[in-house]
Image (cartoon, rainbow, N blue to C red; front, side, top):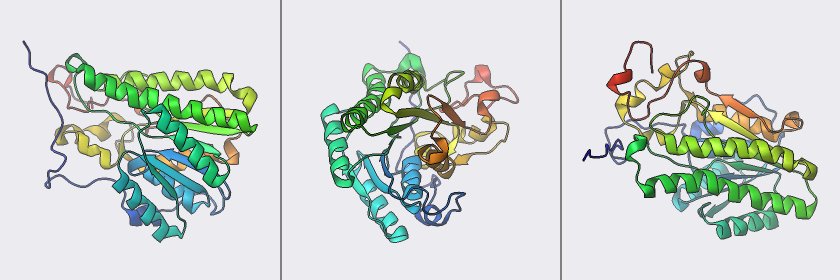
Length: 301
């Protein structure tokens, strides 16, 4: 019997570098957008306590939006709220919950709607995965990733759409997915889930057009966030080689793409997948647990 390989580092290892943008960087990072671009716009962001969701919340608040964030870690959510308040003077709404629970999702959508009077853009950023060879996935591990990344995203989309249809108001959904065009070795669970979300989005972009609901996706490539802690250092050393620019993006790159799709400039964009990956789709393959010797050739990432 072959023992499953475990590639998950110690998340509390003090010797590992801290990654991701600081609160100061998120407060001061230059943006191409005018300060009032999203004034009066209400944006709900799942997974808003860290990484790309946190960056999106900072930018949306800086652009004048009403911002609500949710996630499973209450402490992270509160720290993000406090940092945004200190930076912008705007108090955002936070709610600790799991998008795996459709009843909790329904309650969240209702609460945010009641607080702000509407939800204009829903950003489905929450998700999670771990690096592992697919043959070694446990049933529990597979179901956990599918339930969060696919089912949880669906519950959020459906509940928001129900509210928009009932109110006769337009809606905008932005799903953060992944670059799945050529597969994702060592991340087959999230590849399956994200591909499901992409084609679900394309389907709903048509089906929900009569309700004036737009549905689009953003597919990030190698974006350096706190989530890098999930991957071995030997794998991270090669991540940037997976795109022809040979560099990593950061959460601000994705936040600005989110702001664009939420803005009036994107009012005629529907059913699309915006790739933010430095050209990775044309170039390399990420091995989040480290490249197996079988594939280890010069020029491969």
